[in-house]
Length: 270
Image (cartoon, rainbow, N blue to C red; front, side, top):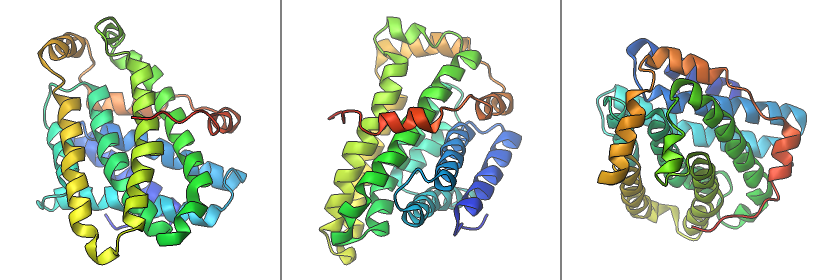
């Protein structure tokens, strides 16, 4: 798998990741499916004139995707990716996590860690504020796509609604998670990097990675009471990873009219 240099190349690489995950029954493929759908929607937005600066957003999309593809390549080569991605990939080998947890831990690594890095690389230093409006538009696409996939999760995880009854507030929390991470945490991290000489990025990113990995641990291990409820939900969840991935790939998608109305929605604070 080569690192892509255009959004069409990103989609091809993601198709390859998805195909290999389906063949292997690797639950990490669930995040790849979600990411592929988001990327395809961003590509559609580029064609439709949804963004103010299509060239800049395509560059951001490629830089962002490359961080995920590099993590996948490191895992496949037997090397260790970032702590956040190592945790995510290790969860893919375990039967216990719900599909929802696989999605959330992948979102955690890619948004809370990778997005800030990609954003700071795309619009370095004083150029960063110029990216904010289109950055929020990408985040609106992400939130809308997560909501559409969340609805289809009930088809493969029919007892997922049980989490609402034990305090997880499934759909609300998934959407809020993505909005908080993308609009608040990732942008603030990009600002931090923009104010830091690139020669000093490594320790800053490493510290961020450690904190993000701790969030991922809480996603996968939310405590005894919640874990017991997750086991009940997991018992009714379909175990055919390839079939589940295919179903999620076909999930209905929101229109850009609906996504556009979310751009000006209030930003949640952590």
